[in-house]
Length: 187
Image (tube, rainbow, N blue to C red; front, side):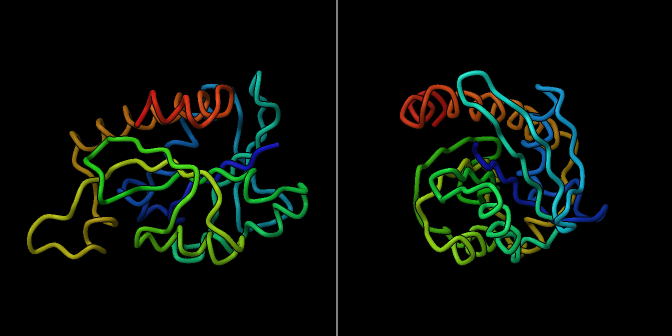
């Protein structure tokens, strides 16, 4: 089994923001396979179970904590599933990539991303796979918080919706064909 975690913030106020692109990708992946998100025994997450031919079982996870505490829900899920960091894939936004660009990495640091910092701190290492989706850099005079939590305009929403579909496809490829093949194709 693999644990695929999309990073985001709970609540309506954050639903259409750049910081929630991880949830957008998981929604796209679940939708492609008829999986439905529910709140399980651990109330601070939404999960969806699905199987992918060639990859086995997947648990899709949306932490319902705020971004800087995203990793706090993972140790219990990983223990319960007998999973290690090599079984973990995290989907997150990236301000250092152009809007809609994908980047897959099999390990690395947080790159200044508070959600990834939290995941690294709670799972005890950096050796998990990441799929980052570019949200572009902030504009002059805009703070980082304003940028990542700002509302998307219609054009940006469309670019990120298209990127979420490509990212769902990239996750399928990653899980069935391996990281090297996925990086060659989608990076």
